[in-house]
Length: 94
Image (cartoon, rainbow, N blue to C red; front, side, top):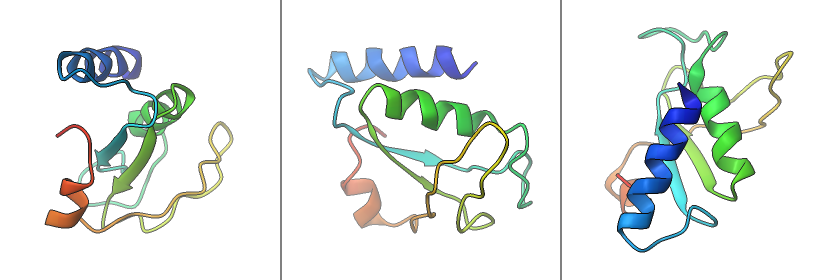
């Protein structure tokens, strides 16, 4: 599913005349399940990786996961950003 979502993001950006390269994209939620701090099997991790590979500037907001941890398949080294009006203003697509 992350590959499908990336293609939808690319399509949405193209419709606005923008490229995914250097676009600011905010991922809402990193946890695998609601209200937990477990990221195992989270499709958001793969989604972030794919977007970054295409040149996007990706951030995430999840109050349950303040920082990402190294996992077998992912080592993103990211911190959660607050979900605020300013954060949303600085995001390319929402």
